[in-house]
Image 1 (cartoon, rainbow, N blue to C red):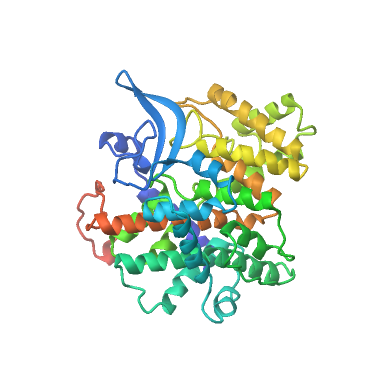
Image 2: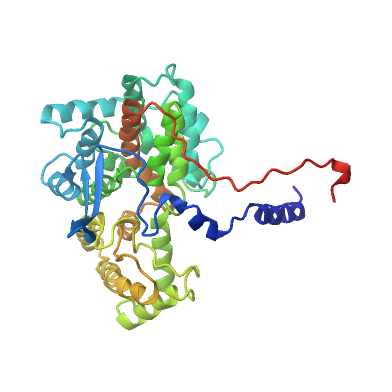
Length: 448
């Protein structure tokens, strides 16, 4: 295609599609479905999870330490208690989100068995679908695989709750395979590395299977698996208002099939403003190490962060990635929980110096941001600040950072899809104020 044509045409698109910012205020339109304080416009009701970042004091909303509840249970308790026992917490939290209650030992074992039985892809699917046209963008590879799986399901369009639940459990079970196999295909065909495809072990947890399938020797430590398990729990659901979960509600409301809904959610999650945020943290930290001679020197690190905020360092956008959240202000409970696991893994991996650097930035960044930005709420480290560091310590390739987020978040998507189908029978259709005025048609010969 002629690039000069596209360049000129793009300018015309911009010229005729740009809307005066003042009109958004005039018509009381909330950009991004958020009010001026960044609070999301109420669009639905949910029993699945709750994000709490403020409390009412004397009739006013006051920021408070963040809380995240899954079906009423604190995320902190779920992660803390999962590390006490032999079983892993992600599968337990999975049962909780899907069915509304914590499982008994018998229910947990039955559910774990069902998940194991579903860790199977159709015959030749890995060769014929995943291995063909491999891509560095593993999220796109997963989306292709999900849509293709619908062709193997003779009840793909059946949206009865029983069938949707069957489909969701199956996709949850095979998502780690779609992600890791997609990466192995890319790594072999595009990066000329060795190819190995390990089958998952139905007796193992999701976290264990990810590490098992990813590594040539299939070996991992218990701490590595426990930390990844915690990461999966912390990423699996977040209140329903996030972009990919809202996408799940929107596409489900149209009566679409499960495979199309999950593919749409994947497409939403892959955006750098959503699931790709931890990649930016890793890239920022790598840039810091290149430009700061002593990462233990507070003044040098401070100067680098100031340069970032002034647009003189890293990507020039003036953002310290991993700092701040659309809802939380005082603290992100996921980051607080995760930090304890990160510290333990850093000690095992002899990366204490890196952990101290992250802790230093977590302490320093909010103050620097508040000095340079007009703030309507506080700033604290979010879960993405630490997740990228954890994945790097686990030797997980950058290409799999967002797919691992998807492996966790599909559980929340599934719960919300089922909730939408049970409770709402109308297609989601928000209103847009049209600024178009009627114009008289002009014959093509008379147009200037």
